[in-house]
Picture 1 (cartoon, rainbow, N blue to C red):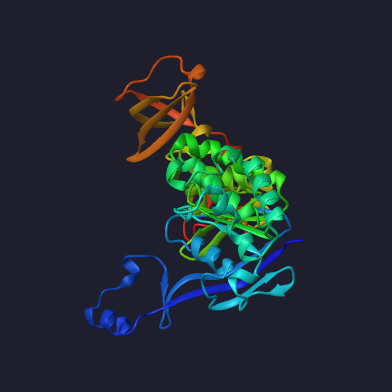
Picture 2 (cartoon, rainbow, N blue to C red; picture 1 turned 30 degrees about the horizontal axis):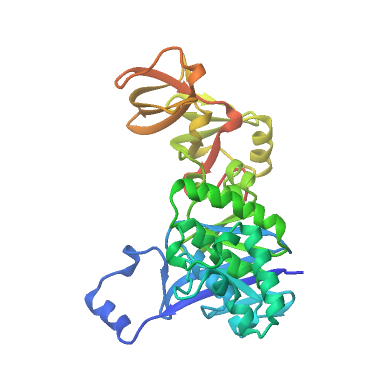
Length: 392
């Protein structure tokens, strides 16, 4: 069993000596440089972080740079002190437990291999520190090397390996310890696109072969969507939404999540939610669409009234129509099975993904068209709070 609980975790980086006075004197508001909260204590990097992680679950922390995801991971590892809250592993509070005693392994972004040691020596190092018998060390290292397909590199040094091979060694060094929890901090960010895809598949296979709990940090939503059992989306130190990949894609909690998850990014329009005779309609640029029965029921359950909204629609859910929202084509990108149309609609840039088979004629820049969308695909957000109107 390897369950984790993060209860109301908070991390504050105190001001260094004289920093607070200096900023007041110069009157330079730090909030404009970063969106993290600044208090009298210092800069709040993580706040009100609550998460229960089940045994053998694969959790992905995702968000833009500076959102607090790596800081959270380092607090779990014991590399950062927890300012407030509790980290509980298998029922035991771990706040003051030394990193080496937490039975946690971490894979870093820059591999962190010892350059003067061979691959074998790098992987065996932590086991030797534990004074494990040489026969057992050899067995564990060779088993891990076999899982990661790096047996042929065991006598090489890191400088003789490619980036992908070094990352496999770093992962191998972690799994030989059979840790309760495996932490990964953007392990694929230094690899090229092809290698990232290959290593992503390797991590999925690895997860099935070793019985441990994973916490994985990335800013790449593709990694988050393909690897995670659940995704924790962060912004400015706060959790924005926790859910399965499908949940956060289909039911984003707010405008930030909606704009962050999905490639190409979701389109947003200023519009109105109209309630007539207990039925709801959404209107954008004169184009009216009726949400499907499921959305109608949720809006009624939430007691929503007519109001200004932001309507979101994913590019792949837009359709060229005879009657709809008028737009002008700026750029048409042929992507093989689909065409990405960048259009301008009412001074707003919109991306449409249209299957090539549905394109009767090729569209060029400057041409006019109309587009629309079905009510089952729309996302309705409060103009005031940015929250999804279908949920709390």
